[in-house]
Length: 126
Image 1 (cartoon, rainbow, N blue to C red):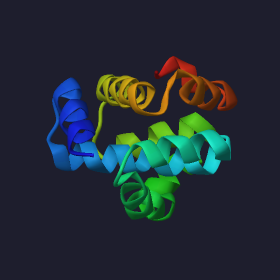
Image 2: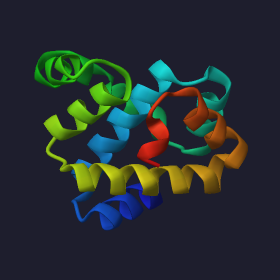
Image 3: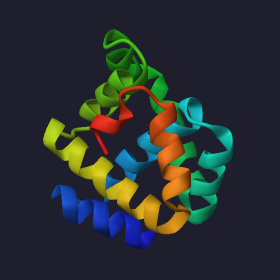
């Protein structure tokens, strides 16, 4: 997890605390929206991922959830949550691209391809 945090923070130009929050929000979203088997592979390949997802899974409520809800659902809601956490659109794309690059390295292209293919609109961010 340390490698993922460092790579995402460097790619997006943010601190590791915000990187961890963003990764947690994305992982919680993927668990909700993605194919269970492949999400399981991703989570198993990233030790500590479940703790981040659990910590940010509550972001569906409160102000961040309201922002996401106003934007619709799916990837738009995810974008709203990430913007609510303090990321710009450029940073969201950088976080997503780097996170999925690490996911491909650790869980494999097949798992990550299935995840991206199963969630409408996700491909534009990774």
